Length: 221
Image 1 (tube, rainbow, N blue to C red):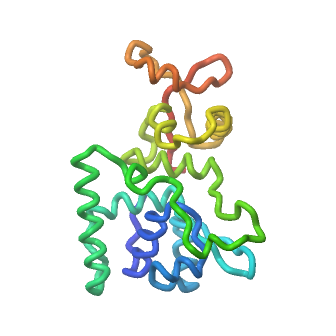
Image 2: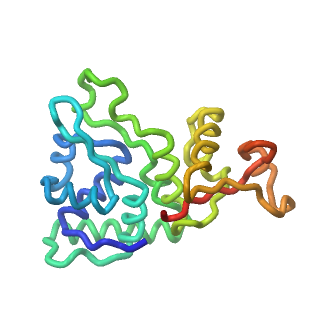
Image 3: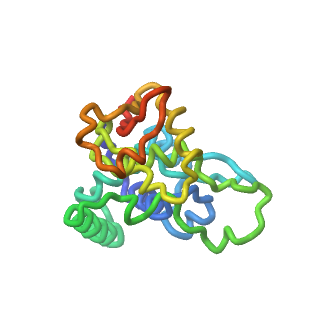
């Protein structure tokens, strides 16, 4: 997958969506990041880095895609975009420190920021659209996969996914994993050498047909 070069403001928006790890309404995003104007919004959607939709009162809501998570992970070791002002350079210095911590601790982005961030004060108000900010489980699985792996197509254990998505009902997670593996570029397979499995990895397996599957991967399709 190529790594798009973004403007300082666009980079800041992606980092904020990463930190929030949820769908963020435009008014809330504007309080945390540079204003996401239509040209940048269209660009980020076209690149597949965010998803935007219109909700109540025609307000846009934005969420980071799996490509967006992967972009943020790579950007942790990158220099600030050209012509960045001091606040953006400071942001990149902080994010570089996060990247060093992740590397030294053998952690992934989701283990620092999670896959479902907390809400803002604005979200405490009653909503006419219940669960409008809930991220579909298949998207959360995709985001988690890209957060815990170093690139598309790399195998990750089902156990690691379960640990990263702690709190999700097992039967619900299994059903979505089985459905996902039917999609192009998604694989869910058994560990070929069963002797390599720990007891926890065996217990974490997903049943697909007559097979217990332990490994999951998403190709960049």
